[in-house]
Image 1: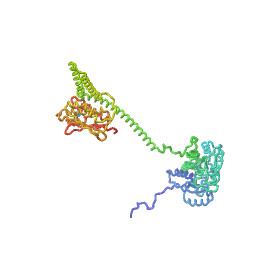
Image 2 (image 1 turned 135 degrees about the horizontal axis):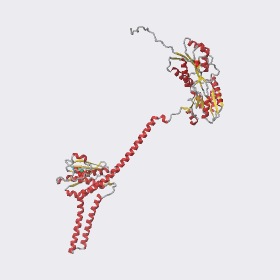
Image 3 (image 1 turned 90 degrees about the horizontal axis):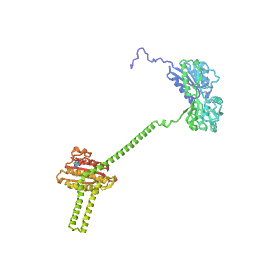
Image 4 (image 1 turned 120 degrees about the vertical axis):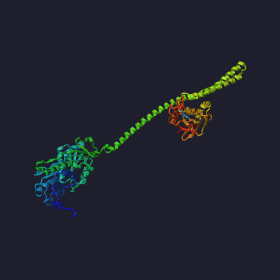
Length: 605
Ligand code: ADP
């Protein structure tokens, strides 16, 4: 035996089932008309929303539009057969004919069962006497409110056209609308009623200005053709019409009608569902008054305003506007947020860049000023280095002038001075004087204050000029200066005097470095060469070289290892080369000594 049956229980026993609430729902016409679908959906939702007991719905169709009461007898006998052994708790009648049918046959089919009705148009039950155990809600088609709305939306309108069909309901609705129009009184009422669909559309198309249409219903046209759900009579009327089309049934809005005043059909269904529920739960239907519920509301379709070019200011304050397209902001909220964030970010970035550029410019200006100051200091510092040269170069012509003058004096004393000789002596004196003033000129050029404007220059020439200034000092120190010039060196852009200062500082340092070496090792090499994108000047010596710990601070100002040194020379070299867009570096010479390389970019790079 695969499994044991628990003791006391018998196979086939099911837990006792509580009786559901059985509800017969009688429908009219085609259940798929939007008004029926909307109402019944809401009704069922309210009825089934967590009820005390399960609710079972038994839908029945009587289709009075097509059959009237012609098959009543057969219907009744079928229903009798269906519900013979079943206890029904409630009959819901959706529409006037279902209500009348239920009232007529209740005693036979569902004796004593209460009836709750809905979907009956207000006014459709005029003269009707409510049977016992029957209650319900009626639905308002507010034609009068719709006419007032039309008059507000189309202030120029003098007439209203009612469009209606040929069925009993169509005629009932048209009568009711006409009575309401009379009550409204402000518009001439014209009718396009009971015609064929084609004729109706043609007559709608011919409506002149200063009017609007209120589309009622066209369940059946003059040919007897029934407008089944989905046939789209209203949209056709709307597209044929040059004047606005309004409607007084909730579900007609959103299918082309401009506006209307009506009771919401979904709300009506919900109210009916709640009413049915309370009757199921035991409420006495006779104690519940029949009333119209809910009250009408006013709605305007944004598409209609657009289609018939009606300004939004014509819409009465109490009306809501449906189908308004979402604003750009609503549609693209996140992309817009992202866009704005990007723009703000960009703005922040751009402004910080601008600030950065300004800051850098200020820094550059300051560094240029400092550079110029340093260049002045540099010039003064070279004065020290060149003192011996200056003295020597001035001394020579001075000495020559003096000996010429002494010779002339002597000859004058001896009476041997001839005019021609005197002329020669004077010419000599002038030549020497000119030489002296040329030296002074050159020094003034090197040491004088002036604005520096960059010019293209030949590096070889400036290096040679620097060496000329240093020649005497070198000779005095017993140092040999060995220039090696390349003819390939490209022109560079800058201040020639500053470039000379660079060379002078490096060579003076190199001469200092070899000062203690034996005389034959006191040599300084000055080389120029072309390198990628520029010109290079190299100053090399075989002095003691640098202590490794000094390498890092070599170019710092104030670093000096000399007793009477100031520590400016190399920092001036670096500042000048960098101002020229170049660089300076040091490396040890082999087997000892130093090599300094100064590189300047070629003109145009
Ligand atoms: P100063 O010559 O007044 O000391 P510099 O800035 O020109 O200032 O030089 C800084 C220091 O760098 C020098 O004191 C020296 O120690 C070192 N130096 C510079 N050039 C050389 C060189 N060619 N060989 C060895 N040491 C050098």
